[in-house]
Length: 315
Image (cartoon, rainbow, N blue to C red; front, side, top):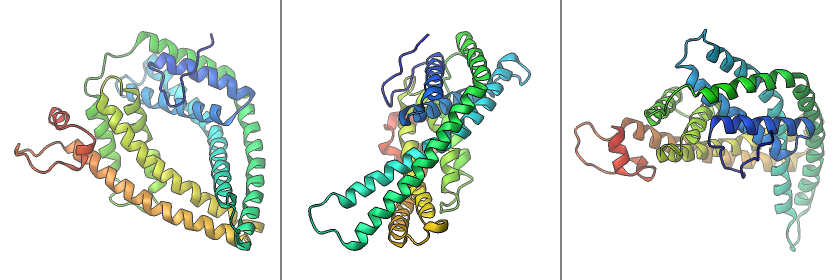
């Protein structure tokens, strides 16, 4: 059965909806992995995994439901391994296109160094497009190879969604905040070495929060904050990878482009670190709740995140 995909940025309401959209996107990417399709399939795969992992913790490991969830998780990991390179190349190509347009979109005199940088950017785009075609072919081949297993395990997850393993999780906000606090405790400071790891570890927090945002608007606010962190880190990471790629091998002489990309990576690194520290403090303040003595003081850092009545409710 064809399931109409929701508009961009809109999350399907139920697990069954998400599974149906996942199946349709899997078929589409198996035929023609366009940029939007690949991104959407990767996101909905991660969200389903986050939801199943959350429910898995409440089940006996030997149960039929738990085993079905584990099977989906293993196949989803393999699917993401081939989705990831395609998605990354799409992002990098898009960034270079915008940057090249911004440099050349002027009626004023363009310096020779800038013109050379644009030429180097075009050559880098060509290299990335070739890699993208190769990565897309691998994705199509992997989907064809594992289609039977993927369809079967999605049927099992759909049945689990029909049975609905649990009632509404009334403690979901506390659960999400604790998960974030657990991750944050492993990152006392942020730097170039650990930012990307932090971004990966908070993905589950964001997806769980998005899944439950209709049940509790606080989850939506948490998801928004975590998404800001991920976006800031992702922006830096993309420029960093592009800078390294531009200076690799026989392209190491592309001095103008390398310097420009290094500069963008440096600027976005500083912005990402500042964003991480700021939002980490906000969410941890929310997790801690108001002062135990009950004395009203200055608004906490997360006051822009939640109304004070919600903070008291979470205490």
